[in-house]
Length: 126
Length: 172
Length: 202
Image 1 (cartoon, helix red, strand yellow):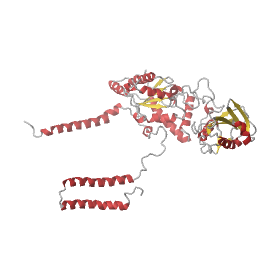
Image 2 (cartoon, chains in turn brown, purple, green):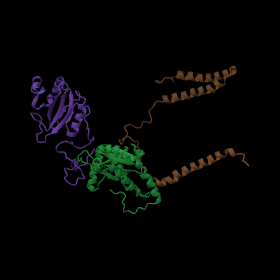
Image 3 (cartoon, chains in turn blue, cyan, yellow):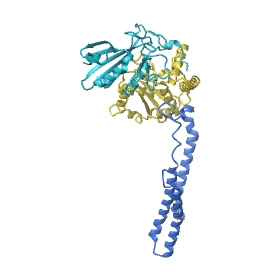
Image 4 (cartoon, one colour):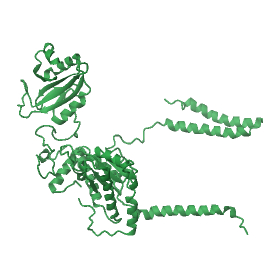
């Protein structure tokens, strides 16, 4: 007699294997590996590697322009808008109401676009 | 050859000269060096090949006169058009300075730093008179005849020369 | 230079054997190549002498990603603090092979500029003589290191590495206190070491 949930049995097995693997990795790296590896924490090992000389300038981490973030954010917004446009366009059946709905959606985003334009977000030099 | 007609253009500048099989050498005092360099450049000696120095510890270390001073700063030039080479020696005393050629030849920059590092001869007008080959606070000048030949190795066990920096620790 | 003394009773267990087998067969070299021995190293890594059959094909020029430093060539006094910094930045377990006579003892350069053997400033495990050593000699050196690794134990404390880090801390303290360059501090430490009869500054 087939159990009613038998199509999902492989998924249960996968869940169990994943859980066992995750726990095994955690236990091995947390408890077993520290017994096997040498343990000598030294401050010198954490310094940035610059071919053995003291670092010439204090890290290259800061000091990049925030314009990159702004451009990425704007890109995401309008790219998502375009992504919404595509399935709508596929299923569009020449009805005024559908068209007006999409226009209102794009109008909302258009207001934001004009605001960003006016604020100079599209000009790199500012 | 250039040394034959150099006296016409710069009378009295050359204190000594010799040539052997096309290898020509002149000795000038350091006051005449820049004028000589301008003359040589006009004559076509436009490639400064090397600047080095020689330590003559037996020479009296006095300024002025014919062979004055402990060091000879030696310049080599090449005339690219006529393929002639010229050696110029400039005597200078320990503690004296020589005019720098960095204004005329960019390559003189590091050559003069090397001479300063290894002999201690300073060059007037050099933009960056620092040591080149040894480290900034290296005590002494390595190619002088009184510097120990093996650098004064403190672990030396046999055949040792003078201890490094006479056993003093260099202070900052 | 006190390192692991074979006469000490080091008992290696099965676990040690497994771990050492893994370590010795996957030695990733850090080529600290300064001179001619580096050319012989390149030849050793190429297909004719083939170091990769010992698991050492993955040479990494970063101290974080390697475990065996091969000092290949003349190390000058100006280079000594740089060598120490790179050795300090390597993660343990780490070993050093000093390849060629310049790295082992200063070689033919008995001058003011050349460090007379890198073992004065960093701990060395295997010395490979030669000027330059043939690739077969260098492979033999790595095999000797593998034999040495086999005899290690997980519970063994690496005294020479601990002393190296102490000497690095001392060097930096002296440098900051006196305002000297690293090179001059190391020269001063070498003179101190010679006076008290030690062979190294760590």
